[in-house]
Image 1 (cartoon, rainbow, N blue to C red):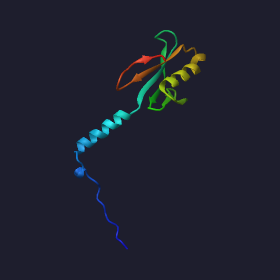
Image 2 (cartoon, rainbow, N blue to C red):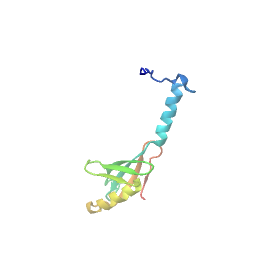
Image 3 (cartoon, rainbow, N blue to C red):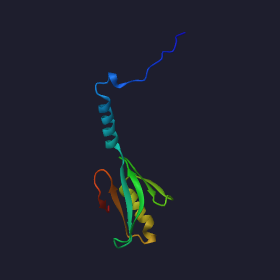
Image 4 (cartoon, rainbow, N blue to C red):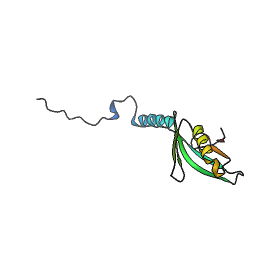
Length: 113
C-alpha cells in the first residue's frame, strides 16, 4: 500500500505575482461583482412626509428587499420591480409614490421609475 503523502499549504511563492497583487485582484473582482445597496423610500405627499420602507441589494439578475420593520421580504427582477410592488402594496396606507434611492459606492440618486 502506498503511504499518504503529506502536502504543505500552498503559498504564493510559485505565483507570477506577489501576495499583495493577488489580494488586490481578489478585492477588485469582489468590488466589481458586489450587489448595489438601495433603499425604498415612501412619499406621503410633502417631502417631510417620507420614510424609508425597506433596504435592498440589487444583483445583476435580481433584487432582494427587506422592510425596515423586518416583517416583509421581497425577491424581484430588479430594484425598479421591487419599487413598483412596494408602491402598489402601500397605496392603501396613503403612500403617494415610492422611490428607489441608490446608496453607497457609485451614485446616490433618487428616481421614480
